[in-house]
Image (cartoon, rainbow, N blue to C red):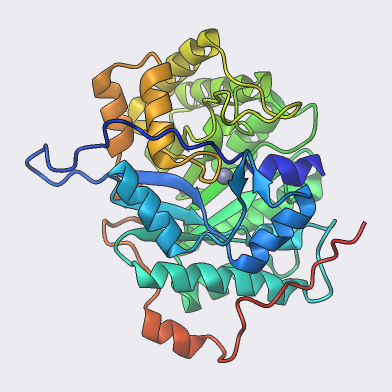
Length: 372
Ligand SMILES: [Zn+2]
């Protein structure tokens, strides 16, 4: 189950930032964004509880994370808005996918759309799909065209995607080309569970996917790793730094990396899965961020790994970056780069309720197989 647990990040004990980000300081409006927060319906929380065998994670309750949960966390941290990520791809994981798999996936993405529609100025929704499923493109189109969700989140570990497998590579090339054509930014948890994962995978992603997909907009999560800072994370981020330096035809304005989940304290570590990061690693993380480019780096808390307030506090305290660099990361606005406009599409609540079939019960359990 490691692959599912790796996806389900630790819930940090509350460790709130003493100084929230100050929005009013600057004359012109600076927008502070958390670029990586998970949202989940009650039945989705129940799936995660069943998988982990516990209704708490790091001492915190696993429960519905609605728009209100997210908004309260943003307010606490002094942030304006967030990229909120559907976990619907988990429902397409072969270990648990049920007889009504595609309906389960749709329902969780619908839930995301409804939550976003209630706070259109603050919640930017990324739908989730297992990219290897035959319904992947159909669901991307439904979420983008009908639900009006602006972005696509995928998770190579949870969906068992390995770019060394030619069939997987072909599917990802097709899907990403489709997203690039439609202007859908892709938020990618790149690290899979293959122990060999590293430099070679990053080279395939750069040379066989990104270089061959002009216009593709990408956010690579956790600096290319799984969360924490292991050797493979360093191989991926350094391969990206070198790859973009060498190949000037690659457009660096089309790619950003988020630093969610990278810094791990005693609060977030998971025994045997995720170690806390060391002072030496914090120095290397800061060096990689500078080499990759502060303008190509965005903040993310990976809630429920950490609250945004707590993670802001941790990166300010632990990463040897100066105040100015931290401020740039926290205030980096990638709207125009990722969406082509500062006006980001969002679902309209009335339209949405018309589009979606009436009578969907968002509290009914999914058809997943969890007995074992
Ligand atoms: Zn995440």
